[in-house]
Length: 238
Length: 265
Image: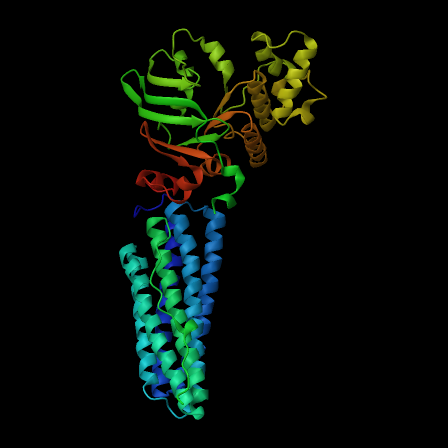
């Protein structure tokens, strides 16, 4: 499959589109780590930079869509080429969503900087963001290397993120019940944690695209889900 | 979920028209077809694709014994049409070709009137008892060839006076006039413009209601558009034979992948 096309311009088109995905991936990784750092350190300048950088990610997504539409219309890709185009479109869509979540995280930094800090929250969120960022990095590596085994592994790692979210969820609930003055900060922090959990889901989706790209089939087997917050109940202490 | 698949794709996999086993074709010393096993389904369009010289036309020509006309060609293996061996000495090739019709790359109408082009086959096979019946057969064939409306007022004009696309549809009408059960098409659209091609493709899809159609084509997009089953030939071997959608999204053999994605290989 690494043979070049007879039409070499076709190869150049596919390479250019995939280079855009890699560029997007790099920007999104930076956005995640930057947003988490700005949150932990209260660095408003960094937060503002992360917010502003999202436009570049959105712009790339639009270009990827245009180029893919062009390739479909002009080249009628088949088999592996078709799967490349289809997965590129979905991956860019996933990356764009992750970028939006990072931007949202950076937006909330401003409010949170004015609040009484919640013990350990900044560090916990940063660890969670770090986990997702590593998963994303591996997912993009899996894409470049066409490594479906690594992609399977990434799918399984999403449950760690879910577990981190579970414990933060309980933690925030407890803080809010202890002292109502924590509610504003905890609500913001909860949205951030939830957004990072969603980022993990998008990374998982990218990993699944890699599996489809390489194997021609989506993974059918169930994977462990550990997000149990939908059933979570914490009662106030009497 | 399977119920939601477009109905058109569903073909009866048990309804086998042609069952070919261990087929070999030699042109003198050249081994042109090697160990090809294939079951061709009824009421299905089967596309043969592959690079030039891969044997797809040769194999197609085995199916109505057109290779008999080539002195140096030698055909081995079993070719069962509805369970009957077509290479059995008792089989009359002329009768066989009435059952297994053929349309060629270049439209080749006889230098006769449009009417006579279509009436010739039914006449020599004695399918009509009188002029009225023959008229009926000709009209039905021309309608099936999707050309009736264009020629009904000038049936006595020469078939060679029609446009290329019309000539090809006339040849298809001529091929279906003898009520064949299988229609073989060897690159039927390669001499046609895109509109005439679309008309012939639409016609092929309609013919599938009644016939087993086997089409050899150099256009992979055409194979993808008209067929339900695709066979990929390479260097005389049948490399892969599967549902057309599967061949074009997730082929199993790297040679198929290389060919359909336009790579050297």
